[in-house]
Length: 411
Image 1 (cartoon, rainbow, N blue to C red):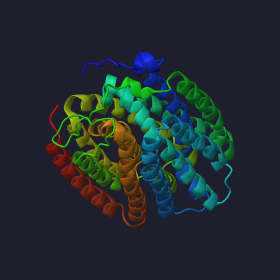
Image 2: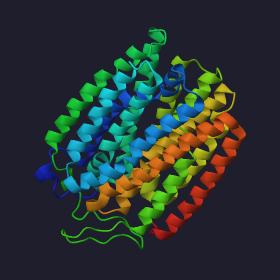
Image 3: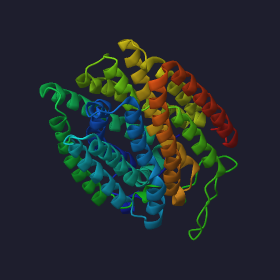
Image 4: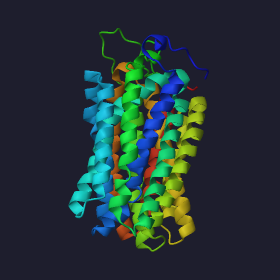
C-alpha cells in the first residue's frame, strides 16, 4: 500500500503524518515507562499487602475492565464534543499522578484503588488518542502506522520495568522509590504532549475527506456531513471476536504472581521478565502490522494461537518455560495493542470512529474482567483445567474470525 497524499496537512498541521506518529509514539514511550513500570510489579506488590492469586486476578482484571469498559463513555464523549486533545491530555495526566502514589500505598485497598485509577486514565484518553492517530495512519497504512506507534510504546515498556527492577534492587525491595522515580518521565511526557497539541491542532486534516472504511459488504458508504453513519455489522462481529479471545487471556498480574509464589524468581527480577515481554510485544506489533496491511484480517489468526499457548508454558514449574510463556504473552499483547486497533479504523468511518473505539473497548473491558477473574480463579484450582478452558475459548475465537473474514472483502 503506497502512501496517499494528505490534502489538508499543509493547512492545519506543522508535521508530516509520519512525524506526527513518531512524536506521539515518543509521548507514549515516556508514559509507558511510567505505567508499564508499575504494571510489571503489580502482582508482587499486591501480594506483599496480603492479596491472593484470585484477588490479584480480580484487581488486575478490574483495572483492564476500567481501562476498556469506561471507553463506552469516553468514546462517544470524544465524538460528541470533538475535544480529542483535551481528553487525551486529561487521561495521561491521571496516569502520571496515580503511579507514584501507588508506591506510597500501605494498605491493600488503597493499592487496589490506585491500580484501577491508573487504568481509568487509559480509558479517558484512548478513544481520543486512537482517533487522532487514525487520521495520520490513513496516509501511511493503518497496520504500519499503528505498529510503529506501538513499537515506540514498547521501548518505554522495556525501560520502565528495568528502571523499577534496578531501584527495587538498590533499595532492598522498597516500592516507594521504585515507583516514585517514574514521576520524572511522566512530567516530560506531559510537556511533549502539550507541544504536539500546539503544533498539530487538527490531525483530522491528514485524512482524505470522508474517512471511509475498507471493503466488505457491510462497509459504510461516505455520508453527507449532516448525517451520522451507522456502525457496520462487520464491526460488531469483529468486537465479538476480540471479546472472546480476551476472555481467554491471562493478565501479567497472574503470571508474575506465579513466578514469585512458586519461587521461580525473586520479586525484583520479575520486571526484567516483563521488559523482555515488551520487546516481544514490539517485534510482534511490527510483524503483524506489516502482515495485516498485506493480507487483512487473516493476520489476526495468530492471536488466539498465542493466547492458548501462554498458560501451557507460563504456569509450569520450569523457569525457562515460564519465561517463554511470558514472552508469548508479550507477543499477543503487541497484536492486541496495534493490529486490533488498526482494524477498527478500517471498518468504521471517521465520524463514528471514537464511538467505535469506545464500544469496542467496552466489550473488551467486560472480557478482560472475566478473563482476569477466570484465569486467577482457575489457577488457584487447577493449572490443567486452566489450560483446557483457555484453549477452548481460543478455538471459539478462531471460529468468529472465520466469520469475520467471510464478511470482509479480500485485500
